[in-house]
Image 1 (tube, rainbow, N blue to C red):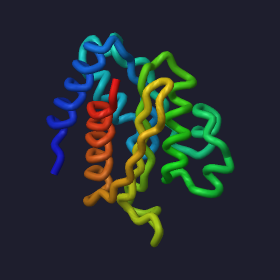
Image 2: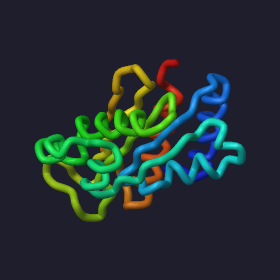
Image 3: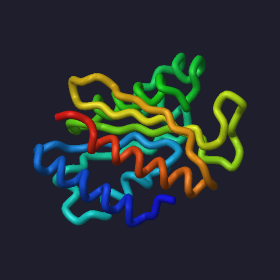
Length: 163
């Protein structure tokens, strides 16, 4: 099981990478509800490498704040590759960040379907001017555990994008 100390370490590693590169990060969060932003801003001096976060829990917020097309949400749903790629692109468009991450999923205990069961989470990462990289994971555990794992995976993704 992922521990909170693990995500704190990941956040510090992200900070080190971004500081070294002179880059800033933006985050677009849905199922994590701001937990990624909280984790990175728990680090003193994070304003040097963290630009802003978008907590877009509702579909309307995704559309208004990040420009996610209504058609993407209608056809693919908020928990989809298309949605997270639109979210990450919107985070870059609406920030001064050099790279961004996005996460949208079904943390439970309800809300799952046969095609998208509880624990389904989509992630996206993108550098300004680059292509969207996305990943889907089927996470296990209760709501808190799914969300904690999603925070960790989102931060790990930033450590693995080029630039």
